[in-house]
Length: 301
Image (tube, rainbow, N blue to C red; front, side, top):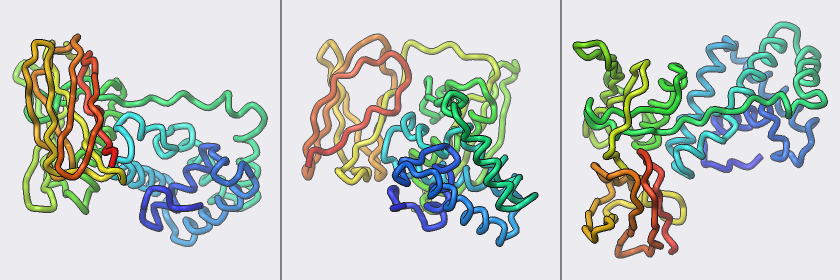
């Protein structure tokens, strides 16, 4: 299978295996036997490396998820429709690896047939897509709140979000500290990430880790990415944001192509434009009803 997302060779191999266990056989012309043969080769690689299946499974999913987020080939929300984000495939992978390590190739084939017997599509669990409800993460007061009530998924989403915004961990940025704080009244808990970008700049992200749902503010943060035709961020683009009263606000994209506007009133529709000397963009009319970091612009040329 071609490397569709410019992943490393190892990541591409892991991505292929994750497509197989998720039932995405159209990547192999719909031939499940070809998919099964590919999976056997992959399991043989795992066995040869003597990896612990549980720890290895968690590691490869986290690694490929983060890498896909860092590519910014789609929105934060839509990237999660890729196979590596699906719990259905992950559970299948765990069962298949367990049988392979216990009894070898025949056991793997039997488990594969059992999982993908007639009607397996109906058993495919519905996925939970994590969305940013509000917050830009710049301060405790504007800590990012995710839509999920599942603690583990929220923690995973924190790493996804930083990779989506800042690039790939250990290449474009490195984690220096990750810790939790609690307000004096105990109502708010924050998970805080201190990171260092490749250029030496330090950046801090605040995530709302409270178990209680917070009340959404009337004013939210809206932002997104300005990208060229190849999906790479454009530095120095000017984004204009026109309010209903005609007032115009401006934001400049950073070196990753990201921009944002603070204190945007929800319930209104706004016009967004992008200007850059080397690119042309179509304006967008957008209703703001909640926090949104996926208002992206792709250059027409």
